[in-house]
Length: 255
Ligand SMILES: Cc1cc2nc3c(=O)[nH]c(=O)nc-3n(C[C@H](O)[C@H](O)[C@H](O)COP(=O)(O)O)c2cc1C
Image (cartoon, rainbow, N blue to C red; front, side):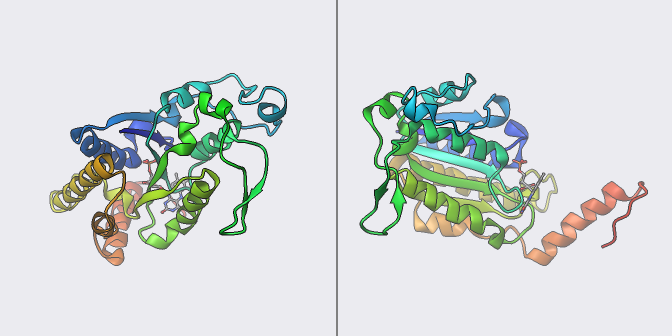
C-alpha cells in the first residue's frame, strides 16, 4: 500500500497544509503504508505549453526538461494520491494547478463518451503511459485543503474539481478533508491547543484507515468536518491577532 502526497503550498514543509498532511501520513505509516511526501515548492515544474508534442511527436514524453519526470517516477506504484493545497481565492494553489496540467503527458489523446454520464473524456491510458507513470491516474484520490476564511462553503470549487479530476482519471475520490479555520492549526494558545491536538489525532486515524481499507470512513470524515470553534469566535480571534500585528503601524484598514 503506497500513499503519494503532492503538496501545493508555497510554504511547503512550513505550511498549515503540511500540518494536516503530516498527521495523516503519521497514521498511515503506523499502519504499515509506504509513503512519499513531495513539496511542489521545492521542485522546479514549468507550465504546460499546450504544444501537444507529448501526444503527437514523442508520445508519452514531455519536451520540457525539469523535475516533473522525477515526481512521476516517485509516484510509481501509488495506490492513493493525496493532493494537498491551501485555498487560494477559493481554488487550489497555482503550484498544484501547474502540476496537474503537466499530467497531460500521461493522457491517451482520443476522446470517448462515457455511456453512464454522457460526458466526454480521454479513454483509459496506454501501455506507454503506464511506463511514464500511470499510477498517477490509477491511484485513488484523497483531497486535503486548508483555508483561513472560516466557513466550509469556500471549499466548494475544490470539492467539485477533485470529483471531475477523478472522472478524467478513471478513478475515485476516497476522501475530502477541509479545514476552514486553518490559521489555528499551529496555535500555541493553551486553551486551543487540545482542540487542535485532538483534530490531529483524528487525522492520524484517517491515515490508518487509508492504509488499511484504502478509504476514509464516513464516521471519521464527519468528525473531521467539524469546526474548531464557532465562526464568530474565530473571527474575533483572528481580528485580535491582526490588531496586535497592526497596532504600531500607520495603516488604512478599518474593521
Ligand atoms: C494569496 C492567498 C489567497 C488566499 N485565499 C484564500 C481563500 O480564498 N479562502 C480561504 O479560506 N483562505 C485563503 N487564503 C488563506 C490560506 O488558504 C490559509 O492561510 C492556508 O491555511 C495556508 O496554508 P499553507 O500555510 O499551507 O500555505 C489565502 C492565502 C493567500 C496567501
